[in-house]
View (cartoon, rainbow, N blue to C red):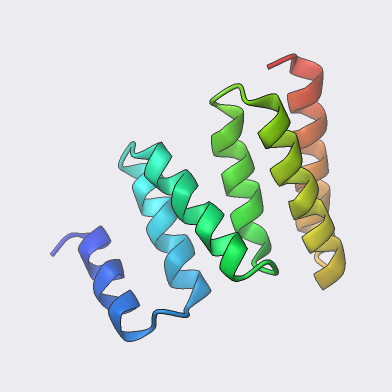
Length: 106
């Protein structure tokens, strides 16, 4: 059983576990299935809008697609989520990434 299959099996037993959803999305990204990873991260933030790491990873994946509007939107939402939960580190990382993205003209 590979890592993805293990994560999927764990999710069967704990379908509301945000970390497991996040880990599975990151596994898809690691496997080169970035569209599937983006879709899973999007679903995760819709289900759990306070799961801050999902916004940053989703934004980074979107940045690769050159969709400036959606990238900016997701990262801005992530910055707000980080602020709401008091995660200054994540807020700072997303701000820096967003600024670099916007300055790069990507």
